[in-house]
Amino acid sequence: MWCARDAELLRSVAAEGLLPQLPPLPPLAGDGGASPLVSEVYMTRAPSVGAATEEVMSAMQGSAIATQATQAPLVHSGRPDGGAVLGAAAAAAKAAGEQRVALLLCGLDDGGKAWCAAARQTEKATGVAFDVHVERFEL
Image (cartoon, rainbow, N blue to C red):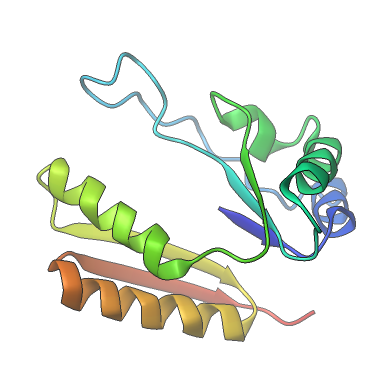
């Protein structure tokens, strides 16, 4: 999941080669061979999902985030609901017989604090533990 204020930020990150170059993950057993990677992009300043989708697709064309996914990224306008995202991750973990989920965050301090708080609340509500790793930076 990526959160960016606008497409210019995504373009500059892609131009600098800062998008991760991750090896492809193996398909999950029983999922028909689909990759477990699904890209989601939240454009925090986009007025609508349509506008956000246009910005994201033009900014990410040919980048690692676009080429690693087996499908086009899901695009949203606004900020993600951490509780809903982590609740869905906890439910998927339980359905797979897992009791732990890795939450890897990189970004501004305020966003990291909000996600850590959402992880603690989700742990209490679901019993699924979140192993949190945070890397912070400033713009």
